Image (cartoon, rainbow, N blue to C red):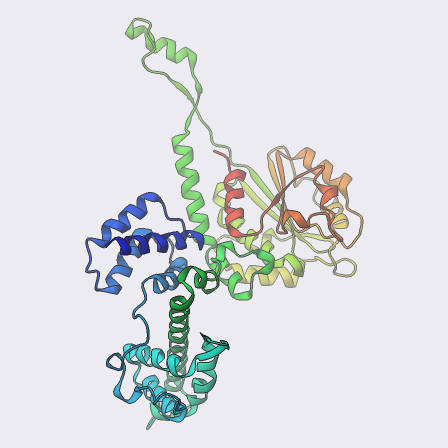
Length: 461
């Protein structure tokens, strides 16, 4: 039991290192859960841990990957009893029969039996995935298995089998193709999981976890995010906005008492002989600022700007008014594209197609854009306005418009510049950040976690 607790602690520590928040209370709950489930039932233990520590559906993949490393389904080489009789490994030194394995895989993809497919994945990794990387040392590789089995080349024969007696080209074929795609992806994930298991036995789960787990979407740098990462981030905009709004509401409720109302307190103390047992406070009126967003939407920072725009409009109930202006080398107001209840993807597409953002050559020009903003929209920034500028300040060595920016900052209630580049890059190359930071507070916001922290600061109680 002691060894199991140590393994549990190492697993929960790995979750923290991967970016999941696991509190001490949740560690205690997870330990207690071990006594409430059958420890021989691996899936029950997985469900118990997930119930204790998981908070967001997006974190489930990371959780499952780490759980499989610390609580593997099997140890060592799978026995023949765990697999099918037809998959008995060949005699030592004899090459595996790849044609036979491909035929077995074909039948498994037709049947869709997950457990049989998982046993098959364990067997073929042992037969096809091993490679000697150094004298006396071996390793395991997913690509060796998938290259030799080539499951995608079985698609045509699988479709013929699934659509026997049915008409091709209709809904039946679409459903069959989707089913096969999902099963092939499932098999690939099973092979990857088995390779990780074997590597973890050889090198230790801690070492494999460093490369096996992808960064959480909210921890990925905006400027390095892939298309899939940005799609996941955009899916998280409204859940993130709801969490922030809930926290802000709770903070306002807890802090609703304002300054001490001395007159009412003294009056109430007359009933207790002049002793102020109960204090009275003036009502607190929460400040809801106006928000003006001025964002660079050029290619280098477009993903960051789009995500921040989506979040700002998802939180628009927290502001009195939100106005948005976009620029590349000139500026245009794009608030009209973001109507309440509208589709955000369509709004971004319309903004890119219809807004007048290019004046000269389509390369970032912060100086001209800032001056155009001040000239075309002189009433946009006032004493109740929180001014938010989004961009990396890489200005192609052009004029900075610092004098105009200083005037805008002076007219606003608050002014911040969110920069998606690491602070260590500021001022390098064509970055004009050193000119701007003298007049506006610049904040490093490289990922969604940092952006969430900034939004809490932007919306004070």
